[in-house]
Image (cartoon, rainbow, N blue to C red; front, side, top):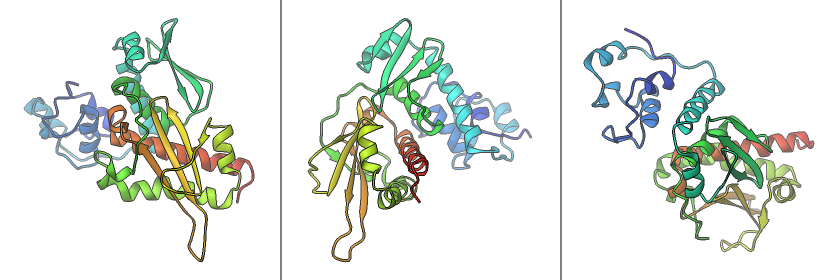
Length: 268
């Protein structure tokens, strides 16, 4: 039997129809589920028996997370090269000029052309590139409503909430607790806007990692023996513009960016 070394090998075996008969939203999500041994490969009804038999064996894990994300980015770039970029720009209310779609990431230009080539005014890590490309491919273009909800209120959020707290909210809180200029940097570097929070936090900042995908970071200072706390909130339209896996990955990327900035400026 042939071994499967990464999700992209599985994805290439599928027909790309995103039929959902495997109970996953996309073929790429199914490929990841198979790789993580959450789904058998024969759950895809369109694979021939010979393919199922050949690839039903042991699964080897990829060398690094970065390697997997690099492969995922290449697949998504290929998919973008097959769509009508001008139509995608219109759908997302984005700019289209010189065969390039341009959106704002934290207020800075990010462009991708009809061949899937990327250029950006801001350095963004691989954790963020995958959600950005998924946003261009699948975002509905629905404008934010200004009503905020928690991660667990998103479609698919409850099962991932514990991981979201560990990988996204807690790292940002650690930075906020030790790096007093974090919120100032959110305003200046990430084009954030401080608002009066409807949730009654001490500090509330709205960031736009994507034009139609705002997040609100709320921080409560320590008081009367209680520890400080931090939570990230999402607009009620978030599900229309990003799938839950992309939202989770995007927030991981944001947390990593904050940590690097804090280290660069001497936070302990």
